[in-house]
Image (cartoon, rainbow, N blue to C red; front, side):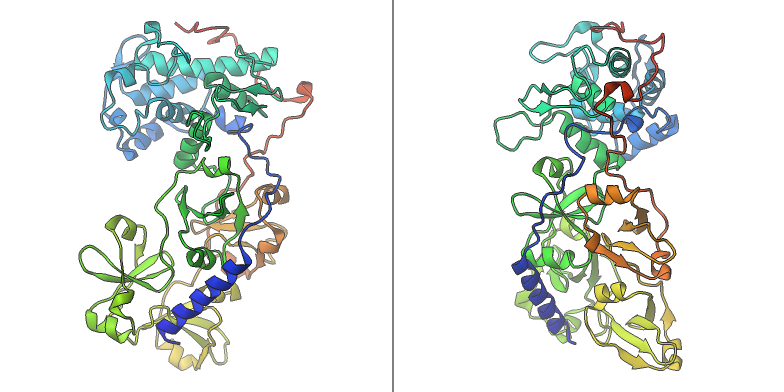
Length: 499
């Protein structure tokens, strides 16, 4: 099959799939603004070590990685120390403080935060409708004060069943931007007590940000999002998005959406769920598109890989027309990993399916390299319905052996050894669903599950379990809810009483 024929086949497939449509009914998922993060994640003070916090700030190219700022007593210290020790004192996760710093003043990623941004970095002592209190000025006071205030909210929930701001589990309360919220766990009640705004509205009349901004930042930085990478989401407005790198990338055309959805799972998402993911660079090109970068180099795009076309002569021999070449910016191009250069026309950039006579093994052969195909799902993803070419074992043995082909990203799979556990392939790992209920609550369909060989599944290292972000389902009877035991000190009682 020529490259042009393959491209036409894929385009036809895309048109057929899109004619049917990708829209699915909304499942009754547990995720909502009523349940932002789990309380166990919120209170995990050991989630990051002191060194982890410093490494994180350096990875973000944050000025906080090298500044010296006053702690709550006025002594100059690295922000890393201030953040980590405040988290330990308050018994909450350092991730909560890092996320809040970004949500409130963007001081982590801002290369040059102002003195005022640092002085009121957590928005602590800055109630809506009035200015910030000078009593709470200073980076250390802000971080320690916010940490202890979060702890105070949790302790009040344990002792009184509500926070000083009257947020409680299961009680409906309206946010400052007009949304009715009934927190489903302590962490969510604490977050709304600190910031009584939901945010994320799309009607243009309500404040953007709030707690949906918190959870968007949390998921981008620390994972634990509702869905793993590789999942494809459809939005209420009909747009389709691929989750990749913790962000959502729009599949910009029906053809792209159909081809990307051929092996991955498609889930219908509500708008508020979509907006908890940062929008990344759209995916505009189908497989086997030739693009030209700003330097005049031409590339053939296949999946998430770009392969350089060595010369204009190779390009001509591949059968493409110069008018079919699309321009691409360097930022878009960098979202593709670079593969082997196409130096000769004989090197089928898609690869050729070989069937080994005798052993009946199947291989994808690209140039002089063969890669084992250990399951029909892998074969369909790699070459579609192309018929194999039969070759003898002697001929096959002359080829160099590369890494076996892996299962496609976003595929939900199981295998005989691992039944009844199901996995989603995400970032090359096999991530087990914590329970069958998790799979259903997240909107995946049992009809999406592929039964594959053990060998194919075991190509992927075991990853973290996939939960529905609602593993703790508090009872409607508040007396049955497990709560944190109150401690004598440090303790927030009412108002801003830390200093």
